[in-house]
Image (cartoon, rainbow, N blue to C red; front, side, top):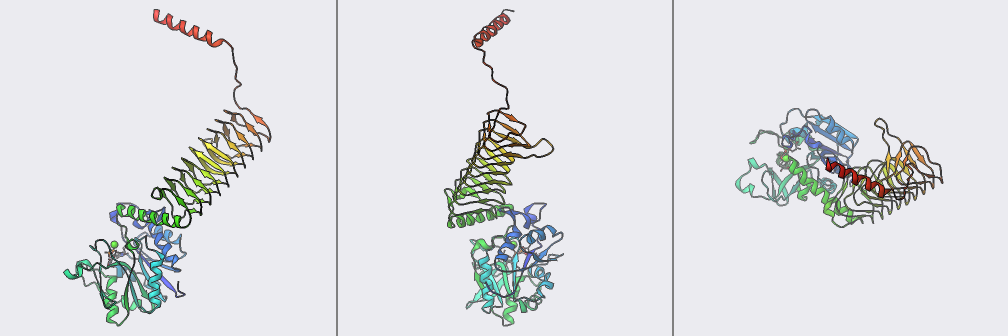
Length: 453
Ligand code: UD1
Ligand code: CA
């Protein structure tokens, strides 16, 4: 990372009609984060503090998505879409503030990595005036071709304007660029729309800079860095690449996964070293898993915190506000929402714990339910340390169960239970000896009488 000042221009004025969506293209999400916010995140990682965001009409939501990552954002509206150079020049006022480096990135290219941006900026620091990020796609169709001579980039030719020979070049323009700040505007202002599309091409800056005696270079970055999203098919492909990268990072950081291709992370998932993730787990946003925790198969998380050596699932659902303390256990078909489960507590089977606290070492039996909602309001259930809740009990909130209390199975608990007490909340069982014989005889006789009618 350099100490040079840097502005990043994010181009996001495209309409994205091929997404067939009411939502602007760059707000579709990958790992739960808008595409354009992924771009901002990479930019932020490269030590860039200022962003000039070029949007079409109604860019408020797009601006908010970028601001969620970087606070210094200036928005520029490009009312007519006349090409990528025209779009960059919509940010003229920001560029004119004067930066050492100006990066130009596309808002629909979410997989760009900080390392690629760092490399481009390094080349500027070494003396280049223009750095183009090139790549070698499987098929170059549709991309601008990079025309090099003796290690220098001479021109970028858009497919429509390229000759037969130029079309055979496999080294293509990823679209992203870095420009030396002090001559960026002077070069951009010389671009015309004299081409097949009648557009102002940013790529023309290469020939213009060369004519001006400037140093222009291409760097090669991996193809997935410059994947642009135009359709939902490409969105899904980008999601897959993002997930693959994340799984690899997680494993290299010490997380065990038996079938990594079946585990899906959100953009902000934190899993500490020595956690074990079994197959088929989905992480929504806001989840952290501490070291030593074991997450069994088919579990689903959102806004939840799992403590060290806790044990979750299989088939557990942790919803926002679920916090499991160290060594606690949440088993199969258990849902936990807005609730703290204490150290070593066990909620092993078929249970709903919502708006509650469960004390250390408490044991919640199978089928126990906190009845937290009365149709209008949510109420709290407090369960003390070392409490035993018998199977199939309903705890009707608000209600509090004191430490070491014992709730008999099948109870409906509507009033507070003090510490150390035993509570029954069910009908008392009666046994009539021999009465089953009489009952059967009576029913059999009734059946016979009916047949005879
Ligand atoms: C561009 C490059 C091409 C490169 C390709 C890589 C140019 C002239 N061509 O082509 O060499 O191989 O990217 O994907 O730069 N945008 C605006 N306003 C505009 C035009 C575009 O904001 O007036 C934005 C788009 O929303 C998009 C980005 O700029 O995010 C790129 O524009 P697009 O039209 O997709 O460029 P390509 O034709 O793909
Ligand atoms: Ca494109």
